[in-house]
Length: 189
Ligand code: FE
View 1 (spheres, rainbow, N blue to C red):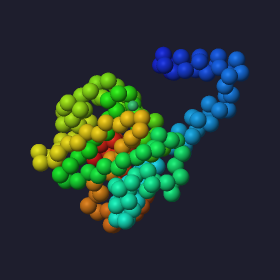
View 2 (cartoon, protein in one colour; view 1 turned 90 degrees about the vertical axis):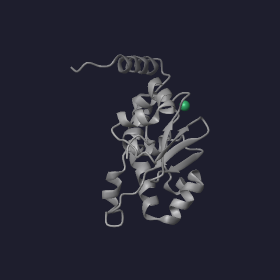
View 3 (tube, helix red, strand yellow; view 1 turned 60 degrees about the vertical axis):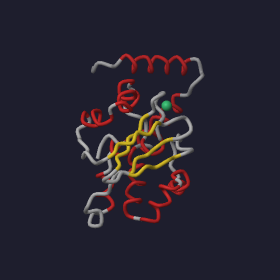
View 4 (spheres, helix red, strand yellow; view 1 turned 135 degrees about the vertical axis):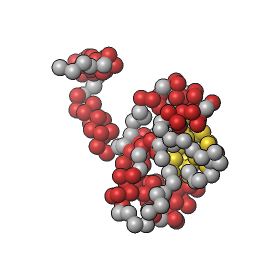
């Protein structure tokens, strides 16, 4: 048996007690897990990004009103009541954080990665974004400004990465494969 993390054991213990006491149904838990495994995740955000890359009208709507523009996708998962999409360009690179806790656009990206909730990321990305981005594996040109967006309970941000140069030649699937979760948080390209 592989070694389970203490958090996993604690969650499992809590789940068993709640089920035993009749406060929670096992099926409800399975449903939430399945939802976030199969239907909610970065593939949703990638769909939005690729549509914006291929459709200038959609991109304009997305940047003007993120919440309204993504409505037709009917994503579930929540946490996008007020979505603001920020566009990367050769001059500006955007990074998203939640300095207070871990607010994150669940419906578009799934559950936040562990490092997103880490106090080190939350404080350092504001003070020294370039150093943090370098740790994620890339350096921005000197002329590129870095903007850091602090999420809140009200506003969630999504980064629209720069489109690849061969965007017109690539198939939709090839484009979808290029959009990483990290790029949509701004810590990847
Ligand atoms: Fe938060």
